[in-house]
Structures are given as C-alpha cells and as structure tokens.
Amino acid sequence: MAAQLRRPPKKTEPSLRARALALLARREHTRLELGRKLARHCADRDEIAAVLDEFERRGWLSEARFVEQTVSARRARFGAAYIAHELAEKGVSRAAVTAAAAALKGGDLEAARAVWRRRFGTPPADARDRARQMRFLAGRGFSAEVIRAVLGGADDD
Image (tube, rainbow, N blue to C red; front, side):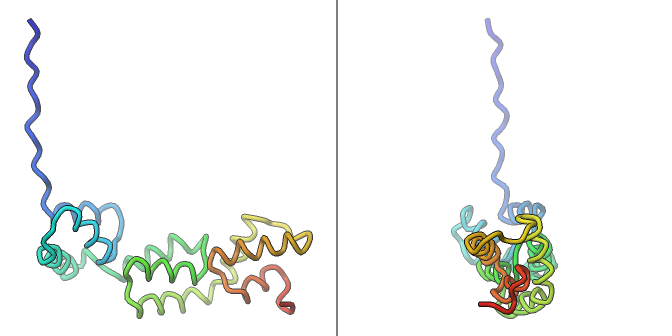
C-alpha cells in the first residue's frame, strides 16, 4: 500500500504591510505605484493609506529616493524629457519632476553623445540616415537642440 502523502499546511496570506515591505525590498516605489499594487490585495483604501502613511513617516517610502534611483538608472540611455515623463507617469510630484528635469538638462549633451556613440558611432552618410539618427535620439527624450549639436549640425534646421 502506498504511503499517504501529507499536504503542507496552507500558508496564510501575507499582511498588507508585509506585502508593501516585500515590494520596497525589491526596488523603490512611489506612493501611487505602491498604492496601486496593494489595491489588488485589499479593497479598503483607508487601510492602504494608513500603511503608506506609516511607511513615509518611517522613511521607508521616499519620493526623493525614487527620483534618485530612476534618474541614475535611466540617465545612461535617455534624455531629460523621457525621464521627466516617466517620473510624472509614476506619480512623482510636479515640483520633484521639474527639479529633476532641470538637473538633467545640464548633462543632456554628454548623455546624448554617449547614446549616439553606442548606437551609431559614425556620422550619417546621407539625409535619410541623418533623419533616422535624429528620430532615434528624439525618441530617447533628447531635445532638437541637443540632437543637432550631437550630429554636428547645430547651425542648420
């Protein structure tokens, strides 16, 4: 006769606080992001708000850290406009987005040159290639002025 297999005891669902801590252990989140993720597990908005308020009080949930982490992770590949848009989409306050965008604009030319070098490395051969390179850099969030400077045509439109 076959030995009877025992099933492991059912695990209890983690608390809302435990879920929030687990999410923050992986990466920084904005209040909006974390609230949305927790809403999947709890319909009580007041309970979610209480957890988020506690985490902010304790310094576990920080908009400034989120902005810093996002900027450092994205800077090598994207321009100020792209990063600012991403921050706004994630629920970062308008003042923090504006401050981050202003700080990023100073290094946009160097970042664009690095991105262009990694992707293309050689000047455009013709107008079609130039347009392709310009579209690529624009899609990465670099301004037209910065793109013209990178491609060596700051004087033409």
